[in-house]
Length: 229
Image 1 (cartoon, rainbow, N blue to C red):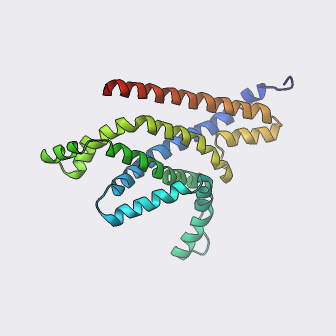
Image 2 (image 1 turned 180 degrees about the vertical axis):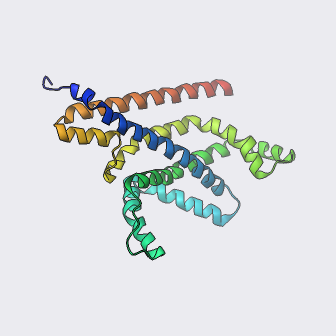
Image 3 (image 1 turned 120 degrees about the horizontal axis):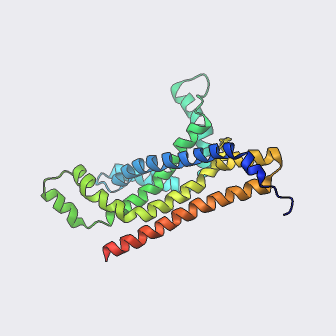
């Protein structure tokens, strides 16, 4: 332990911060994109149209049944080949690793956010839906103005927990050679032979961010319990 030199962290801080910014950016984009498509999937699953409900259920079950790293590989390597066959291109189109990471995480997280949204919507008493219809609101208006705001409040702690998991999962983009926070630290560690210093620093940053978010989740849970009481 006496040979550990943490000055290499300060020397490499700009590059590490660049990787951290990308990790946070990927987390934010995947969160909002996943919430948007997850909400649509949740509404489809709760729809009375059997074909739409079956499609949404099949998509959710598929995404929740396979590892994220496989989804990343499939999209990056197989989707260009499928586009080549469907569009008749001479060569597979280059999607790019960063674009693949964004799209993959949005599609993957949408399945998990769908189940969270569906549980939140089902937690609202049916009487409120009937009351909104009695006031002359359409299905879309009742969902947007009455149901979804209350459902979002009920499921906010679970959503934040899923976002913490998403933040941790972004490290898997290393398989695409994308320079995220962990990827930046790994490259520096291999270049300067500072594996211990870099990986300890990365673990500390992940610990601080995830622990802070978990404390926020607990605070929100206590607040919602007080409101319900």
